[in-house]
Image: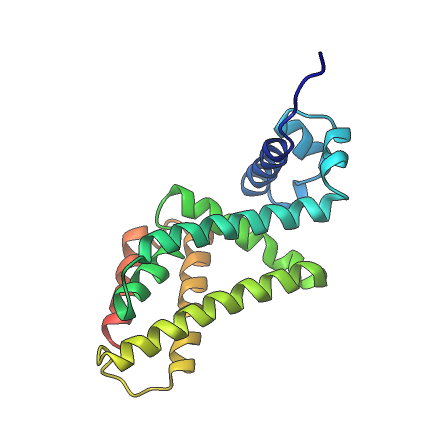
Length: 194
């Protein structure tokens, strides 16, 4: 009797292996051979599910973004304005092991995206989605009278997103200089000034 293979599960296993390799060893080390070895499969199995290495990497990034979106939806359910914005921004900081891995994965793709238009398009689309969410929540906060500043909401949006990226990168690059509690304090203090 032939073995029944769950193809969706096998794809998820390969993508999980790709994420682990990228987070642990860097994106340049994420070869098809390394990913196959991490997943416990042959290169032939990877070729059955993915056209090439770029498709594996792109799928791993998209899967990570989808998991983040699902978590954010749960965290912000029923919240609006500044309360939802706090949850969204804090969730985008590497404040625990899971989000640190997500941040390492994301940052690993930044330099590769500069050389790959296909990856850059995904990065831009995902970043636009996050930007729209932040801008919408700022609009809700202003309409509810939660903001004391009359600063342009697009400018605030860009500053908050730059703060998320900068704090995240600083934690990864300079772990002795910035603790998670400092990142959370800096973000909340910035929001309090609004």
